[in-house]
Image (cartoon, rainbow, N blue to C red; front, side, top):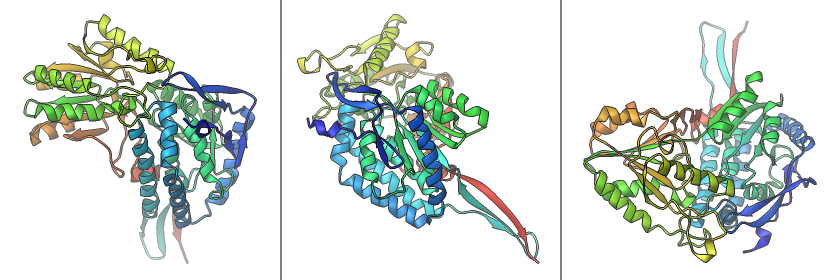
Length: 480
């Protein structure tokens, strides 16, 4: 391991590096060793970030859309030159499998390019009611946008999620997770010479830093990727000034398997959807599997057989799939859920423990875990675990199944596996969530992604996300 890979210059504000006296240690979750010491942004630094962003944005708003897009594409080129480095940072810091991390960096680039191409299509409307009259609308930036990101895909959330607000003429302040901040701080090295000082700032800190920025009167637009609890706290802080806020929060997503499908295909979709290469630390993972009773036993047997084959180990080795969860805090949380499942009467079919090998003993590894005999009232059936844990439930009556599928406070994603077009469309219409897969897994730029209920507000990765970083101004004019 090249230790220089994890040495950060500091936080990045107004085009300068800051190394505050207060620091904290970021660990490698694979062995609990220290990767880096990270400075904690002071309130003075946070204030400078807001002030410098406000100043930079006023000039940036005058830059042509084509010039903004060109600079985003140049940034993409710089990322592409260092894909392996950023992938390794997330592998060592967040525990994601290296094969996944590489794809994640490239997906960030692909989505940034998508937005750079799409921005020219953001247009206003015009109409005329009478001679010498014109009514037209314009999209204008908010000013300073605050992005608060989760730990599970740190590089992608940092790089990709700045593209839309920057392209729409805003400045950005990014606060990534305390648990996995390295790749976002190293990312700032790519900004040199591209953007005006102060336009893009990356700061650190915990809930206090987040609250300081959320409440700041010059921060006009806020976008969050986090847990439900964090999202609600941020929304409360933002409420007094009625700030525009979008939230991409958690999920307790069902995968509904009908009795007319190939079991191997259903199991394959289950494993792909669960994202074991991110240890199940994925808000869109289908952690509740609702299988028709005619297929239940064979499905469960096949799922156990296939999940047993998934390699658990050091995530920077290409052949391994399941790395460690991001931290001791997350490790303990997942184990509490597993124990609650056992205590409440679910049957532990697989996993629930950690690997025994010597090279993994100091890491936060959790073997892929499968429960059967799960009922809708159990904790593991209702709360987001954010770990490699699957709950399998049986159903026979369609209406009862739909009641179970819609019974949680979440509404992010759902999967439907069936060969019946009627079943597929009926279920897709009735499921209470923002994103539905039918016989598929994965996401595509341009398709709106966002949650219902407690899973969020707003959509991302699409035209509507781009527009959401602008305000509509209507101009109604006559001439003599």
